[in-house]
Image (tube, rainbow, N blue to C red; front, side, top):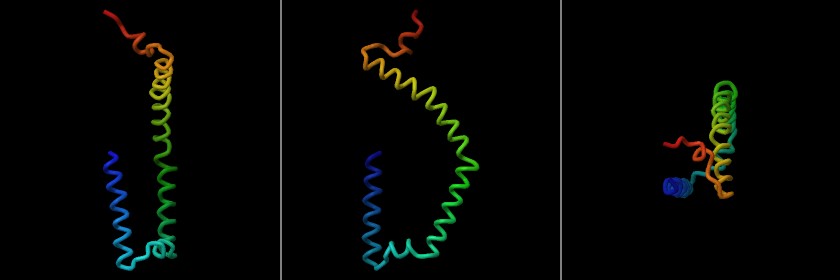
Amino acid sequence: MNQGLVKLVILIIIGAIVLGYFGINLRSIIESGPVQDNLGYLWGGVKLLWNDYLKKPFTFAYNIFYEYLWKAFIASMERLKGGQDPEFIENAPTF
């Protein structure tokens, strides 16, 4: 996974060098009025999408993850650090 991130960073750097070689100034493009207006419009759409459609299901899923998985994981790690077995091993059925 880290190799993909390194490749992406290298490609971005090479792309910026190539654009600079051809005389394209990214700062002037990004700071231009129409681009700023377009980015502002897109950002407003992203905020609308998040607030109206995605926030509740993501918050619900996060709360389930946090309450039932993350807290149990942390409790098990604390027990292991203290030299005890995790609860799921202590409560496991025996034959």
